[in-house]
Length: 278
Image 1 (cartoon, rainbow, N blue to C red):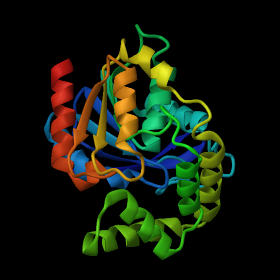
Image 2: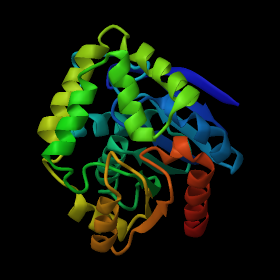
Image 3: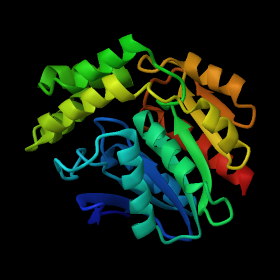
Image 4: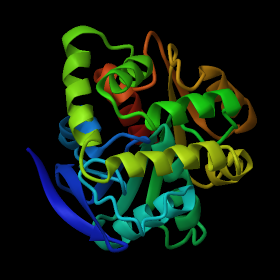
């Protein structure tokens, strides 16, 4: 059963969407412009495998508050995740799974938490087409920022179609959900702040060398969709060449959101990885 409940972290109201019980927790971090609900197709399958699975709305996203005091920076989002884990995680171990910008945030959070190796609760890290490891380049950053800063229905639909490859009624449903969230009070300003962050900060401090060091101490899996048009799978291949300790999976025929487009494939790879490192 999936449940949802409100939380407060760093003074920001947010919520957790959750399924399952047990001492091994999986925390899911959505991408920029996304929300916790995007992970619904993952919650029950991962919970049925024996995990307590939790997804949280990042500040300015989903049902989280659009507080003017929130730090819309990579460090700010990572600090929010670290405090959320400190306040709400209850298990013996934590696996972080982040997608796109959520992968960026998850990696930064893992780096911050893993400074004390002996006391860190982190068990593993899964990065799904992450930003922040290798630079995307100005053209990709500008395209993402432009799509974020325009909340009209047609732009929302175009952005989702570009990222997911979805068409027809599936895309219609996702577009309407996204459009309603985008029109919550304060969301337009939040998206403008996020767009500014994408332009100014997303490529500012690539974490590739930090990932090299982390992957020797913490099991890390990267998952990429072969048909990803948002962030080229070539970046994943570059990461694999540069980070010898990382595990890599390329999913055929899948775009930027494999957990949404091909959930069975995604779950199989993630669970296989976690079983292998037990």
